[in-house]
Amino acid sequence: MAHTSYGDEGFSRYLRSAFSRHLGHDPEDFDKPVIGICNTSSEVNRCHSHLGPMIEAIKRGVTAAGGTALEFPVISLGEMFISPTTMLYRNLAAMDAEEMIRAQPIDGVVLIGGCDKMTPALLMGAASADKPAIMFTGGPMSNGEHKGQTLGACTDCRFFWQEYKAGTISDEELSEINAKLAPTAGHCMVMGSASTMAACSEALGMMLPGGAAIPAVLNERLSHAQQTGKAIVELVRNGTKPSDIMTRGAFENAIRVLMAIGGSTNAVIHLIAIARRLGIDIKLDDFHALSATTPFLANLRPAGKYQLQDFHYAGGVPALMREMSSLLHLEERSVSGKTIGENIADAKTDDAYRDIIRPFGDPLYRDGGITVLKGNLAPDGAIIKSKAATEGLLRHRGKAVVFRSLEDMETRINDPQLEVTPDSVLVMQNAGPVGAPGMPEAGMIPIPRKLLQAGVRDMVRLSDARMSGTAFGTVVLHVAPEAAVGGPLALVRDGDEIELDAYAGTLTLHVPEEELQRRRAEWTPPKIADRGYTRLYQKRVMQADKGCDFDFL
Ligand code: FES
Image 1 (cartoon, rainbow, N blue to C red):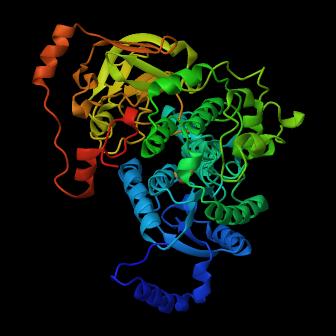
Image 2 (image 1 turned 180 degrees about the vertical axis):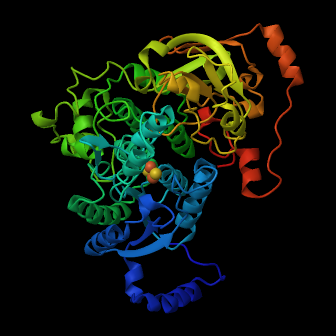
Image 3 (image 1 turned 45 degrees about the vertical axis):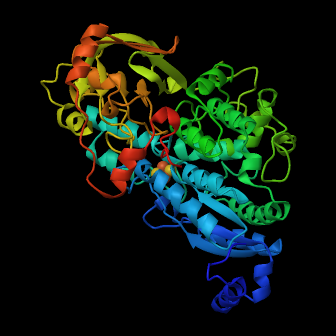
């Protein structure tokens, strides 16, 4: 364990012992494995507002296993509360976690994730610090319900808002639904980014089996918390570090699970970023290859029908991984002390839940939920959640309607004079990591009101932004390089022909190269922030295909 530097290690120990008595600890307690509990509880992050009893349960587990638990705070990011977007601060949270794990007198750490960016930020930080670590998440909300129909945050937030704008539901009903959309503690309960990253943590081997899907309010989550506390003490005793668990094979397992659950497109960025912290180079092409050979098995919203509590009752991630075990690296290690193969050996899905986790031989779709696109409009790649898109639009050629920024789009999208048809391709520029900044989840560009009212519910949309894992539609995302660094997206003009072919994995701007060169000569980069963290972010963030981490991390 490291000590504060006074140039005299004995004095450092003496001083720490004196100051720790206030916490009720005897000096001998610090001869046991000291476990930091990275507390992300916050009232400004509603998805982490219920963690208190879970942290107590983790501590009980640590104590029962012979360790000493010490809570410490790190940045807590709540999707609906951070402006302009949590992604701007994911790297800051990762730096906070890394430095505190490294600097504090702890031998191992329990990472407490939940809301979208927290799980990847903590895994990034823990990967760099490389002290024994285990991931725990606060669990998904239970299902909401309205008029006999299941409600899910935030797929239905978007669905009913769109219907409201189309004029099909009233103010009163919209308000009634609002009260039921997020009915319990926990994170979003569809397979959005939070649930996806929890599932990926399990697949990586960084979370105890079954932990991803246990609803926040079930007793089982407290039991899982206590087991997590016990497990981290063993990891410290065995000296098992994140780099021992998160290997290339573990990332391949996580990517396959991502595809089998039709998970969030955000996970592509996060998994690349976590892997790069460990020197593992995962490329978009890896996602493409693994998606093509992984069946889509979990029938979960927004791409499917059910939600996380249903997935839990069907056996959760262990049962899913057992179903697809022929595709996995079963010899990979995990925080349980067992291999992935051993963790899932007894997992199964009862016949009653067979529509939720489909048999390997009878999948929802033959391939995965995310498609990688390349072409002259996205030389370094783009992605589309093809299974949450309209099938008939996955091969589409249309004329561009271009918005220069998020603000420009908001100002003009509902203008009755906007020249747009259902066949248009809505293009948004300067909404990427540098451009926005922070790559907000604005990629699901709203359908223009006049088209909504005419019955249109989906169009091809394209940007360098991200999209919430709970969102849906024919939405091309993460175009790289982004417009703000001079990517070809910056050169698109109204009326240009754009062709999407998700089956072929291509994205093409049908403008002659000479004309693109002419436009490029006229292009000037947008101004970046004058000072502070945002300036650091804009100067040092890498593009989406590199995980949007800072180049110096
Ligand atoms: Fe926190 Fe959806 S708002 S997970």
